[in-house]
Length: 274
Ligand SMILES: C[S@@+](CC[C@H](N)C(=O)[O-])C[C@H]1O[C@@H](n2cnc3c(N)ncnc32)[C@H](O)[C@@H]1O
Image (cartoon, rainbow, N blue to C red; front, side):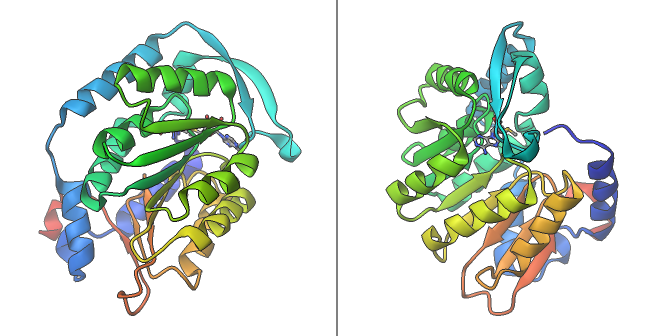
């Protein structure tokens, strides 16, 4: 999502506080940082997804949006019409986020993935391209957006792997969790309200296990989202969090004896930490 004043101030504070892999003592977190933040390889899939992003950013087509998320006052779904190019610029995961997701998935090798918020399918394409044998459910409230996402996934031959479910998360999340039973990776990228985020997090908990990773986008989007993130970090089932600012990761592995929270940046951002 597009960043604004609050997020920029939060980033400056994050930057000051963050470590790089060279200051991390946990072998697990060091390995994670190497796999996700430090890997510089370019994969063919990146070019494919970015070509679709460019197409979306140039599209003059206007589609209907049914927004059940942060911009829906009083819980009412807001309906409006928006150009696809504006959705692509404002709502889609950035290429850095997409490529971090791709690398995370390559490292974790999840088989059951759930995404809350498909939008035009940019995140779903990165997830699916990295996990060709995984089952992926991606939930989207806006039927037009879901339609465009499905077409984009089809262009890359990823449509059989990703099921885009149209409708409010409130309705589709319980059914999707029921169908998947356990989840390996959940990407929370929609409905940027604290109460909703915490509710979806709680709903996922009966379906997580030691190897599950929950990925949150936009925890620095607003003060209430940052407060929700802090509550998630303190949840008794959470044993480790690793925050990359643009994506924030939650782990449940009981082998991590004392709960730890890391803020990490790629080592090139703080070369003096080497
Ligand atoms: C930030 S965009 C998702 C971006 C996408 N994950 C990507 O990687 O490009 C959030 C999407 O979530 C959808 N959304 C937000 N709240 C929702 C809700 N409660 N139910 C269904 N869809 C919702 C919006 O319609 C929007 O398309």
